[in-house]
Every structure is written in C-alpha cells, then in structure tokens.
Image (cartoon, helix red, strand yellow):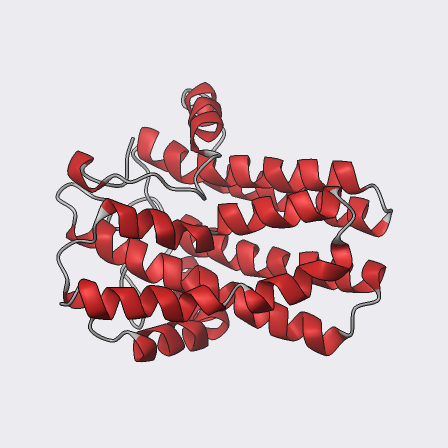
Length: 257
C-alpha cells in the first residue's frame, strides 16, 4: 500500500527495502505479530550490526544494516495492512532510528579511532540531512490525495491517540520525539520556511531529495563498512551535507510556493 497518490510517486533511492519489506508485512498480516514487534526486530538487527562493527566483522555488519532497513520498511506497511495505524509506532520507529544512528557512528568512531567531536558533527549532519528529506516527503504525503497522514509537517502538538493505543504512550513518545528531533526540524524549517505552502513537488526533485533518505544513508554506510572505509564515513557525511543547501536553493529558485 502506497503512502502517495499515483501521480506523486517518485523513484525513491532510499526505499530499496520497500519490496522485501512489503513481502515480510504480507507474510505477517494474518499472524499475531504487530507493527511494534517489527519495529523492535529492526532495533535488534541494528544492535547486531553494531556488535559486528566492534568485532571487525564488516561484511556481516553491512549485511545487518541493510536488513535493518528492509525490516524498517515493513512495520508501517504491516500497520496499513492490518488497518492499525498508530502514533506510538510512528514515534517509536523514529526514536529507534536516531538512537541506532548515534550508536552506528559511535561504534565506527571507536573502531576507526576517529575523534569523537568529528563523530558528533557527522551525527548532526546525518540527522539534518534526514530531516530535510522527511520535511519535503511529509509535505508531499500530506498534500497528496489519499496519501498517508500519520506523519505531520509540524510535530509541535501531541496528537490524540488512535483507536487501540494508549494516550499516555503517545504523549510520552511524542515528548521524546520532540526532544531528539525538534531542533533539527526547526533548523530545516528556518532554512526553507515556505516549502510547506506548495501543493506538490516534481518527481525528479523528490528523487534528488531521496539521496538524504535514511535508507540511502544506511546503504552508503553499509557499503563503506564492508569496504573497510570506516575512517572516511564521518568526514564523508559532513561533506555530503553540501546538498542541503543545493536542494533548498533549487526549491526556492525553481519550485516557489
């Protein structure tokens, strides 16, 4: 099930895990497995990848990072198949992602003896890149007829719990979400405050933006780990941030609100 109307679909470089993720979701559709169980499973895969990084088993580390991305694509799809969307799952997914991103980089820092301050800058850059992708993508999803509306353009208000979930869980996870992501959201919105006024974005633009999708970021990390280029990963993602300003400049110049 697509998050976008057919006319708004684009070639998403970060979404390579969607097809196997959908297959997994369809296999679990009539079981007792819930989307939360799948979210926990991708968290476990991420931790296994970190273990293999620390053990210098780089091919296996890269494999489990890719597996994490595939399973990550399955939880939302399973929620749509079971018709059980939830803010709990949406926020838990995002919180797991940011924790795992930090742990991936910390493990890489430890093994490659990269200065920790460079790792922190790289982590900041990776999160800012991902926030730009999510900002434009969520705008597109919310404007798309029949698109998924679970994610909001602005996450400044605690949403009302959906049927089947606890308001307390939603409130706590929303608070955690705003703490860990709020600063990045504000930076991106300050850099491109008019983007949400657009009704849609061209497919070519969104494909370019998907270079910053978490799936593509993790694919790059997995490949660089497998090739034993660990010491280059933090510096690469710092330099990779140049596209933030290029994408925003393109949006403002050619895709005005």
